[in-house]
Image (tube, rainbow, N blue to C red; front, side, top):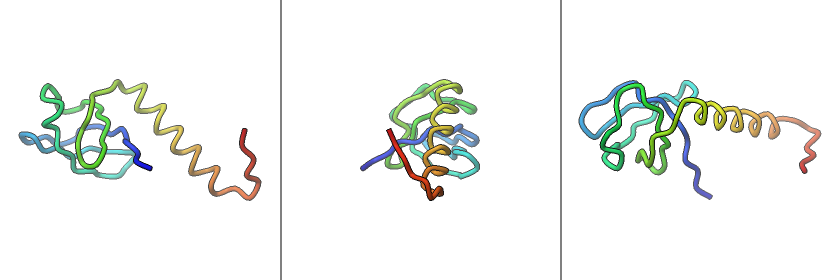
Length: 80
């Protein structure tokens, strides 16, 4: 299964960016989103920024990932 993750661009040089995803630094090629700028939130898949998204959507996804991580840490796994 593949997963794209949201991250905020904190460094930008040409078509290469460093983005922050919940404290993790990710290198990403931004050539697929040519109008991207420093401070934008991007969705990264396989090392490429595939779209720009707003901060609220990024935060919702980070919360979902946190919830999944917490679910995996519990002994009382009940879904549905």
